[in-house]
Length: 503
Image (cartoon, rainbow, N blue to C red):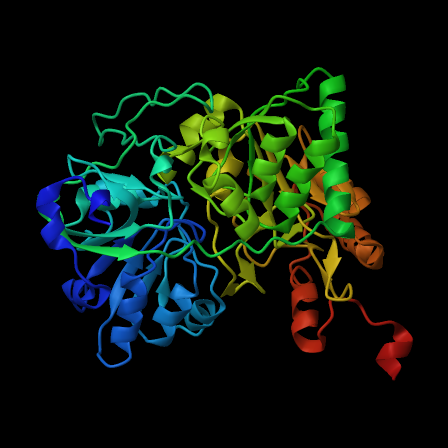
């Protein structure tokens, strides 16, 4: 295993996770690799959770995005976390956050590293970074994600490296490690196409800062891949028809523009739909590469993909990492403050497809909170892309939970993306193209195309009565959140009939 440490002076730093975790002290800020379950700490952070069972220690933890193997939940259960940022998906951690036991900072994924470089966040005491191996100059060849690891390695006072022998050394070359200059000396980031590589292949680290090296041999947590269902297939069908019409109108070509898709079954269904379409030579400029990305590469539809991590099923993980020679020239992994940087998204003309929890009749989108107060996962990179994309698209089902919840509402209970940043809304009922429409036009378009039949009449009534009252963006404030209140009281957003009320 020492062959994976090519700087011989570091051989003496090899130790166990139990010893390495002692470097972490109470009150420290920890920066760890990991982006949507990929390339995360598989030894040190779990060891910290174990330590927290017998010792009173609390830390602030920053990563790229969510962690795998239930690590966030283990840390939360052990009461190790004082503050967490910038994204999470763990139900145990989520409950602790919503109960006020753990503080959570929900950040745009492009901003975390920037805030560290500008000293607007507390400095990193210890960086924990997963690596395939260490180069002769002490630099780190990362594994299945880059995330914020470049910044953590540069700014941390101490560094712990986890060398994962499950990841083949052939990953060398799939990463494009570039760090933009600090302000006020920042230069243009010279990427004009998704396949441009502008940096080095490993993460620079001062060897003097490397305090410990731990070996692991554990795969990333597999992504939860749900097969397309009736609703996600309908959403994909509406979107593909829209793209085909954009080509007919001369606004796009059959190659479209670089695609970005959020994680989850809706995004996978939409991307999978391209396999049987007339589109070809597609590209991606996204955050996460999912199963559908590599399926499209295998089908010949997708020529290149750029992101910050690979988050795939076990079958796809083995297919890609076991056959890197086939895929190596087809994708690249970058730091998330490059994959998500607003200037590049706008320059490349990215088509952004993200998931909404709910949206309202004017096109405001809530992608983070249930009932306006309880965090679900976080904004992730959706805001980075929505504000700057050539096309900003949000998708969700029209209704759920036996149609007792409408995902199209008079007013969203929490706003992550304002109507100014949203171009297209899609549900399984249909698609609303909001470009060039005033608020009243947007509302009618959404009601006509996106609302579930069980709610359309009431939503139309709300809008008509609001228009009678007047305003550029008409609302009935006394009723704006009545659907949310109704659900909290009765378990359904549906309006009771006179007979039901009498009974």
